[in-house]
Amino acid sequence: MSGFFAPDKKRHFYAGILLGFVLQTIGWLAFPDWQGLGVICVFALVLIISYGFELFSKVTGMGIYDFMDAVFSAIGGMAGQGLALLLFNVMA
Image 1 (tube, one colour):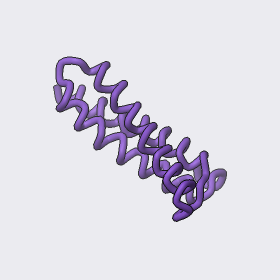
Image 2 (tube, rainbow, N blue to C red):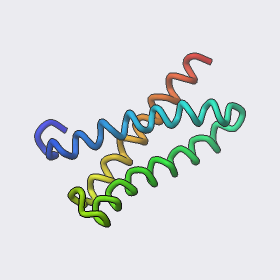
Image 3 (cartoon, one colour):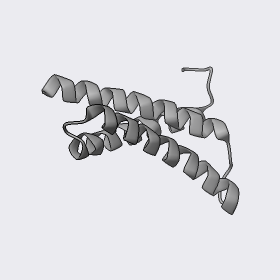
């Protein structure tokens, strides 16, 4: 991702990693016995939050609407979820 993507997309990707990691941590605490359900719920939240910010920008005019920002945030969220799951499974 060094020179192919715009710096703005990289920021959304990194923010998505943090978002996915934090939400997966909360999901792991909320659904300790149902890891699959927690992953699905957290991924849905990542998608909702990622696109929600872009939709908020479009509706209010307070930012620049770019669907690809939401896509990169969602991809980063999946990576963050993977890191969190890896960490939790190593700790268990």
